[in-house]
Image 1 (cartoon, rainbow, N blue to C red):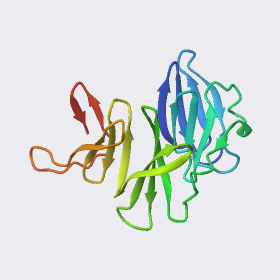
Image 2 (cartoon, one colour):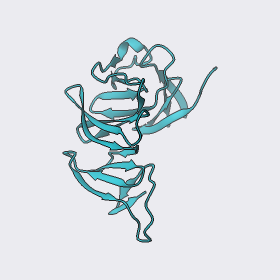
Image 3 (cartoon, rainbow, N blue to C red):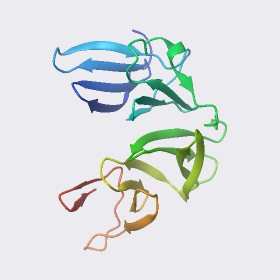
Length: 193
């Protein structure tokens, strides 16, 4: 296979591992230890950056936009089985989307604006339309696995509630050093940055 083979994101669900790559979404059966399928949400030269599951849908992110497929569909290798969300506008002239995350019943999308520093935006998708809920920071990572959305920025970890209210942020360790988080997890009462 020619071209870029970079793996951008790996997530696991049930007995499968899903790898977002420039070749497509590669599905690996961990029980059989084999490649089960390769999904192609779009035709053309796309770099599939990230993916997530919400309810019975799988969402795949490119720099240009967001694609949706039914996770129970056996024919996701066929691009016609996917829908590009039309209200997630292609902003590649000014930057690129870089992460999608399921958080509770919400779909969270991060966009990096390369034209102006510290002007990235976080969106939640409401009725198919992206709605900004935080901006003017440089976003590095999203984690919506628990009851809080953890958002890593250039100098702090921001914590949001299920309603996307800003609850708190960690901007300094005990030693007075500011964190530079790329991602974070909350486990047993502790934030791991």
